[in-house]
Length: 150
Image 1: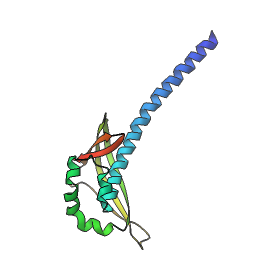
Image 2: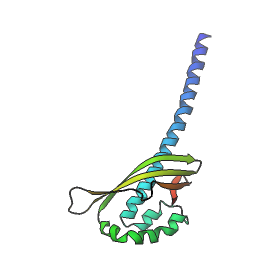
Image 3: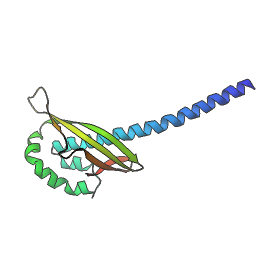
Image 4: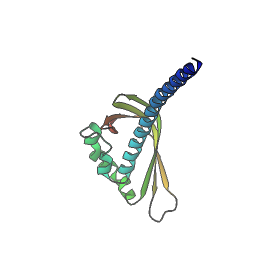
């Protein structure tokens, strides 16, 4: 009888731990994927690779339709970085996930470029001009994509 009670308690603990861990891991994993999506999109954009940048956007979404004009506005600054190795590091204030939609609030992003013949990267911190930028994302086929930035 005592042995059966111990087995039931261990089984209950195992189920509790299994359920508790899986919920937390999914949320952390989604947050990491969202941050990586934003960083990779910026990295592609500053590498002048519009097709790669577009792969992180919801096809036909507001940001996707504006991407070419946004790029053209900053082309003078971005195109000289094309031969450089680009890294992007975001500082997110919060990420709110609601099913297959999410909002990520970005306070800043740092773009670093290591160009040929340069030992150390040159880094450029960017802060949104009107406070924080909110990225709206949607999950498509298990992949987080940027819908718009407001």
